[in-house]
Structure formats: C-alpha cells, structure tokens
Image 1 (cartoon, rainbow, N blue to C red):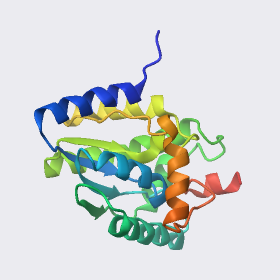
Image 2: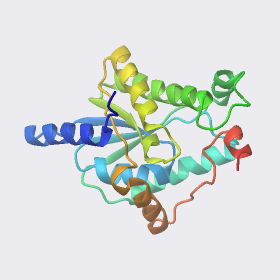
Image 3: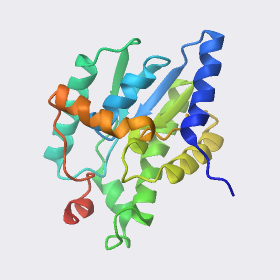
Image 4: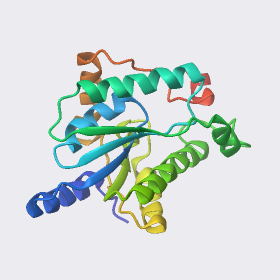
Length: 204
C-alpha cells in the first residue's frame, strides 16, 4: 500500500479552487499560536479562515488561558491576504479526562493521543457543519510529534459523518515546522515545551 502524500493532495485542492477563482471558508482547529503561525500564513492566501480554539486537554487552566491570548494576539498581528477570524470553544477539561480514562499510563503518540485528536477534530467538524463552512482541518499535522496519517484518517472519517469536506494536510512538509519556529521568534510567541495535557507534561 502506497503512503499518501497529503501535501500533494492539498496542492491539488488549492490548484482547483484557485482556477475557479473561489475563496472557500475554512474552519481551522488550532492547538496553539506557534503551530498555527505557518498554517495561517500559508492557507490564508487561498481561504477565508476562522480559527477554532478547542483544546480541553490543556492543563492547567492558566496554561490554557495563556495559549488562548497568544492565539488571539497572533491573529491580530500576522499579515495575511484574507482576514482571519477567531472562535473559542468551551474549556471542558472533564471531557478530556473522561476520554483518557484507562489510558493515563500510555506513552505519548499512541492511543490516548489518537483519541484526543478525534475529540478535538470532532468539535471542529460539528462547528463547521453548524456554521456552514466549506472545509475544516487542524494545525496538528505541523508538529513532527503528531501522526499526520492518523490525523487525516480521522478527519476524512468525520467529513463523511458530518458531510463537511476535510482539508487534508501534512503541514510539516516543505519546512512548515521550521517556519513555525521562525514565526515564533519573529512575533515573540510563547512556545510551550509540552503538548498540553498533564500526561504529556510528565514526559518532559
């Protein structure tokens, strides 16, 4: 079975919408300002984006609030072709702990993380469906620590369930992750040293 190059698949979608002269609406789930920086600079050339900040996994609450403010600040300061909007989901840490029950001791990057991907992407799919977006996707694939294949698998499954197209991606391709580091330096972004949940923090 050939491994799918999701960046090339995204190239095809962008080429198609550009040829049609369209600027589709995109709901972009974001995990943090640093990861979203490259994604926004890239995608806002072609889409009208609303950033959805839904991350009930982040602990403690002060950390969550700090990341929200950095996300809002970046959106206000980053020069992009099409205006970017912001929407904050509910902070529901109890939902994360219920989801993670029985998987607390699993290593990072495994089943617990995959369930967390699904929880956050499902919230994005629901929001995209409710508000009539043309596409939804997530910034998570920009990280070298995140499984792009699994993220796209989950996203495409949710797209079928909610009948909203999922914008496939592997944003770490073409130096995306390195560019996010450069943007973080340029905009003096708070760059956290753990994914977000208390279990990932224990791994530091």
